[in-house]
Image (cartoon, rainbow, N blue to C red):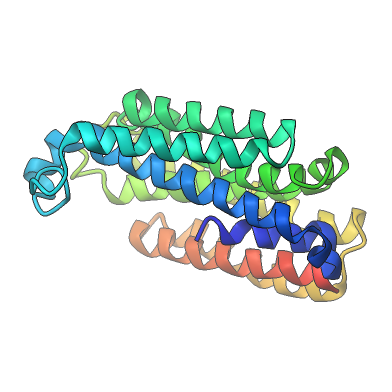
Length: 259
């Protein structure tokens, strides 16, 4: 799924001319695919003790894969991601290295530390946009930055709401809701949702995106606002609606790139 985001970024940046860049786009998709696969392997490796209790059917606790082999697989995937990123340009290589370091730090240290972990994941979501733009040029990175910020803000809001939803079950995690309370965490999530909504008209106002983009992204905005409000009463509904808002937002971005 994350690899498809590279095509979406290409559409935003290059519109109907993306066919001229097909090789680098494919390389970029490989980078994201291998990096995500490596991150998933690290997740299985570092969660092996927890999964013995919560998910005994997963590869490591079930005995299908040895922890050492999962780690080797994860490192191999990271190396493949770096190889393909180096075939594009130097900037994509640097971004890939930074992303892999962030994934390692998250899995090994930040996953159970609440807001810092949420922020790391949200930065990685935004970084997919930056990486996709770096395939083309520095100018493309500047063009895509607003979309990366929207992705970061909306994802961080949703991550906080998910922590509110899971508050009772998060025994070993120091989450934001545990630190400041449900209502206060909900207010912080609302702020990030509102930030994402506030950024959304800028491509229409400043970048020449069409009215079709604006009309579609306004639907996404309405869903985000609803999610930001309903999460105070029903966090599960809030994070689910936020996910729908993110999907419609991505569709709006592609419409903007093509019209």
